[in-house]
Image (tube, rainbow, N blue to C red):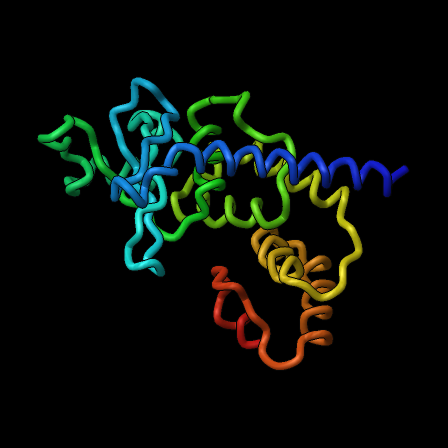
Length: 219
């Protein structure tokens, strides 16, 4: 029964994440031709444009999101401080009258999910997420200091992940689980995943560029 339900949930997660990525991708298929990505509208009445870029691709623009500065400030102390601090982002553009904020090296699907959550776009928020997407979301939430606003969803997703952990050999998911265990101070899970990584890795462990502290990366 557990195995059957795990298979059904895995299929559901994969299907949902593929849908989210396809939905995000359709907004910027013309990027190569136009030189700028199309706008993903989170809030049709939004006053802020977040531009997501990947510095590894020479500052390539990945996506733009139309959002509400009020919702950003309500959910994130990072954005609240930014809009109050006299930064360039706190001044509306003379061109379109909107605030423009840059974001760098975050996963586009994770960004879409988080922005949908804080804008209460419930129908666009997945019930289940994979460990990869969860890790990408946690990184983004930590950076923008959205722990409180996202806590219900992150706790719910994490419980589902814990309940349906599949025994897995050495693979990159072990590194992601190690990060989650460290973030959640689950030292039993941390030890389990660390042992797998240390005993099954030939050479140095690839930490996937995830934000581990130096003492863990040196293990």
